[in-house]
Figure 1 (cartoon, one colour):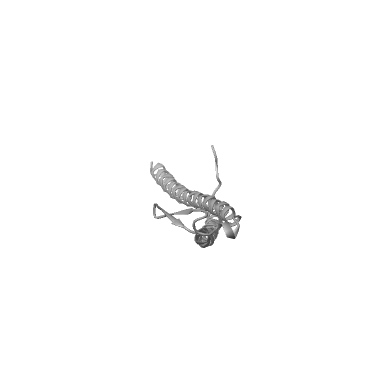
Figure 2 (tube, helix red, strand yellow; figure 1 turned 90 degrees about the horizontal axis):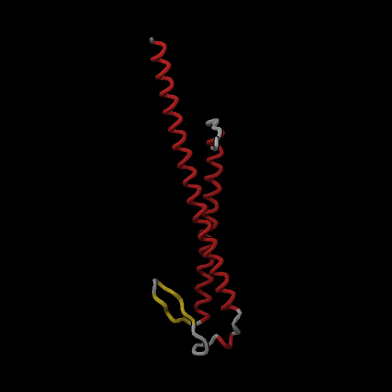
Length: 130
């Protein structure tokens, strides 16, 4: 009878360890998914900025003068009339910030993936899908 008690307590400890490992794995996977989503959103915003920048930059300088063409920029939820040159400068600044932020997110994503791989190998985890 004492054999069953020690066997059942060992099984309970193994089950608890297994649950903790599963929770840790799920947290890592969730973080990776969030970082991938952020990276995708930033890539989309960056692409939009590039398209607008190319479109505005293709306008000849003589047509960029105030009064010939109107240009609006959304600032804090309000459309503000700006000169085309001002909007191009703002776009360049925002584009550079997006590039920097995307690089930071991508670096964090890479670190998180490597950390997960290292954790999997150090804990001798075998992924079973099904």
